[in-house]
Image 1 (tube, rainbow, N blue to C red):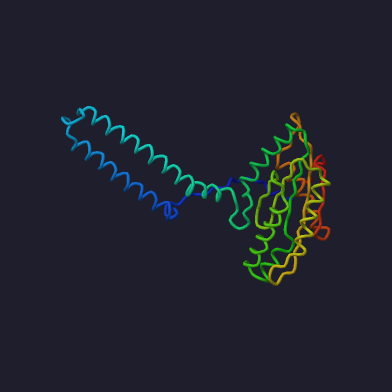
Image 2: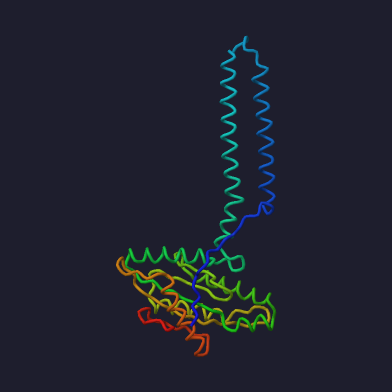
Length: 263
């Protein structure tokens, strides 16, 4: 059996030409304002008569202070604009799948490892669910890829609606998904997965009246001395997924993570 190891990290390369227009306009406006204000400070310093009420040194120091204050204000505004309107969207695109709004593989595995470490510190069980949509290729071949995308989006929404706030849900590949539940036994994870399966069977997506998926589950209670890696659980859950597919699909199979893996 060829396991789907998470060998890659997701990378999102920023394209300066795709910078939002609003960010470009704000930065240009800020630069124009900064240049105008600097010119105004310079004009004030050059045209203030030191013999009237201020010494030449005082005028110079005040001009420098105003320039530093203006620079600081502009730097803070630029930092806010870039962070809010440029870096935040880039970070979201780097971590989340564009189609389903679920975690990408790299972010998913990273957060899964952190969740297992937390579970080990608290000595609580953790369950990994590997899900795969049934007959997805047939949907693409029969109805087109637009229908397949609509099914993926619908499934992503259902997973997010049924996942708890501390659950980790991601799209790990085409029609494959991962769901990590902290503080959840295998029986509770199976109940939650079957609940999602029943909802999917009732969903109507244009010509398709309901769809199904197969899933495998592996659960363990990590400790400080014996803590599995996220992919250790995923590989056993993957075996359960293959078993569910072989037994007729639309099933949820629980595997014991202590069983040896078959080659």
